[in-house]
Image (cartoon, rainbow, N blue to C red; front, side, top):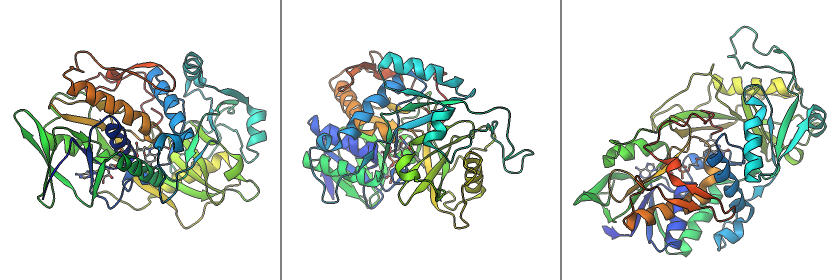
Length: 434
Ligand SMILES: Cc1cc2nc3c(=O)[nH]c(=O)nc-3n(C[C@H](O)[C@H](O)[C@H](O)COP(=O)(O)OP(=O)(O)OC[C@H]3O[C@@H](n4cnc5c(N)ncnc54)[C@H](O)[C@@H]3O)c2cc1C
């Protein structure tokens, strides 16, 4: 079999599917290829799908705030219906505790003021009024379970937080990706599943397509790497690693799923919450449950793994995260049957993604999403389509980086911010918070 397309997109996760939709809108007929049986079955399906607007850099905040509007206006953005229904964005807001570790969010507050991002300051009384199950005793610094003093209060209390109303989460990230697939197909994009890309073909100094694991070939002058935690392998396959100062690698993560204390309607009353004092973030989940993720404190060993050969079972990390959260919610019951998610982030040195061209003409990458780019998928798709078009028209993005106007917020972005050749961005939180 031999196929032809204007562009091949490797990976049909949420960002890959958004790039497919946006490239077809821009006139490129794409073929998306994924080794999984359906769109969004990779790490996207394990995502907590939190949509939040606070990031530690100006560009990150501007991008995330822009990203929010696509989820708010999801049906209009897609321009299609999906026989499976549309994913739901629950705009429950996001509360971030002000702690010494995050500089009491003073930098974030300044960035939000500069960008016009709405926020409110909640004092201790307001937080406990909204979250009566919360005990705001400080437990910082985070510890391992067998460290002396684990679970014992530290000094002081968490005294306030910042609430961002334009935030929440998407209830079904896999469905949102299927929505994007249908939107892309309506614009003539095509998808092939259960097929793995095994070679990036090149001719006359540029990419010419890909070879698949059934030995079939797809000929295309453009190939986009959106392979999530397999991104480094795909870059290596293409021979594209040579000029990259920023690289990507898979990091294993566990997300805990526990019931809320019965006397509180967490599902309907709680926002998304980021709490660096206990190194956890959480959000409501159906059935009055709570999802608890880690903010990766220094005392936790990072588990860098192979994207296909890693432990998919829960470990002591699950219990550690549940107990850390129980410090904040003393009434939390931790079930003996462990539920949740084990999946992978694709992490860069500064936890900021790479949205860029490569040293090989026609080969592009949208990778290193570092556990925090689900929310940005639609705007990343738009920006990648613009970047590819800019480069294909003969512009040198490395020399003269594309400036891209964010359609909702009208801010002009230097796309070079996401360059594979940048120096490590010291403004980053160096964590999943971006
Ligand atoms: C546990 C967890 C929680 C998260 N929580 C949040 C959150 O709350 N908010 C947020 O904004 N972000 C979050 N993220 C990050 C977010 O989910 C990711 O940034 C996003 O899903 C990445 O999408 P993607 O399109 O890059 O592809 P991925 O979902 O990473 O998928 C890559 C695809 O590439 C395919 N592929 C790989 N190699 C090949 C090959 N050789 N041939 C064919 N196909 C291939 C895979 O099958 C896969 O489907 C979280 C991630 C995880 C793991």
